[in-house]
Image 1: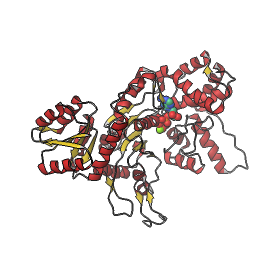
Image 2 (image 1 turned 60 degrees about the vertical axis):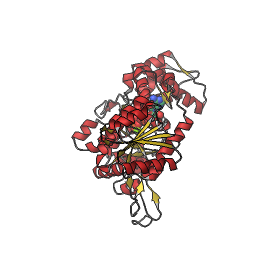
Image 3 (image 1 turned 45 degrees about the vertical axis):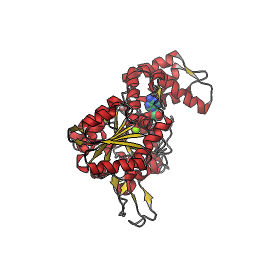
Image 4 (image 1 turned 90 degrees about the vertical axis):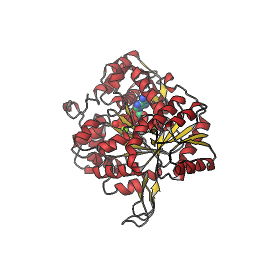
Length: 474
Ligand SMILES: Nc1ncnc2c1ncn2[C@@H]1O[C@H](COP(=O)(O)OP(=O)(O)OP(=O)(O)O)[C@@H](O)[C@H]1O
Ligand SMILES: [Mg+2]
């Protein structure tokens, strides 16, 4: 690749050029914004590495000039530990990533390797993936979703952190996976962490890993989440649920891009792309002090709002067909379409549980229908009976219509608890937070119980009997 270095400090400039050539790329270098503009002229480089403080101006000007000269030019910004905020601003201006000074050769090497690998496999194709009403595994034809797809396609190519917000079931996780799948890290791991479900006393070892013998029970060395996500994408699900002290630790890792294993001395480099999600009002979470504004600022470089399903009812037929073919693929009962009346029933519904609720409704209606099409009556039944209209925050809604859970003497308490938990999750379309509120337990307890009952995210399928299932890891 052709790499342009923009750095006013002669020694740093020379060593960068040398390093880049050693890595097998072409390198040229300039020391001012004015010279950078000239060098970006013809022909523009594949990669531009720029310092932020330059004698005749701001590195942000270089970022903009590079993107103007060549939209697919990857701009890497050099920054000191004290100026992360400026680096985040540079990413907002279109920079691909930032590199911390003093520069670690290994981090530069992996950044360049990924860029060139991607360039080799995607030679300047600017396919419009949204055109067909699909992007990755996501389906949607409504104008709002086309816009979401356009944003996903655009942000996927950068290393910028993405903050995905939206109500429960709107597709935040599937959007995060799509960002990963379309990124230059596609071959790297995608690791999801549910920030509300990490147990407080194991937090550090879960995230950072531990050395053998670092505490009682640490019999083997264990890689933490950061290490597992190295070279890939780390998805911080429900990020506003992260315990406050962990937010501080996270911030430090994001700023230094290094961490230590519990009981370890070695500083490890972190090479992950961050995608976070929340179904809370972020402004509110910051106002009431549960979410740190400085962490928000770093994660919210590229905000992505997933619209609720009732804002995009035009998507219902395409989504319903998509889910129907998924079920048919497995069950093969010969149900391949919807009666017009069934789609009308779906169109009238408000979908408080959003796409997840639709997916579960299609699955239930499948079970109740006879081939060849999903009947209106079946659609009606699955929405009325087991799906009381629960609108977020949901707990206030029609409690009298929630189903009863049969219990008899002789049953184990655990079995009763299990039934009640599953039924509650069903009633709220798998929204774990609402279920926790209804049951009067913490979100963490919900996750712990699911795990304990073998219904955790690994095994909980999106199935009528077990709503809200989500596949984890990859
Ligand atoms: N646009 C879409 N196309 C196809 N499937 C979708 C789409 N959006 C969501 N889904 C499916 O709906 C289900 C719920 O989506 P997902 O888990 O991503 O929602 P979420 O916003 O993360 O929900 P929660 O806030 O409850 O965690 C998943 O099975 C997902 O695959
Ligand atoms: Mg989710």
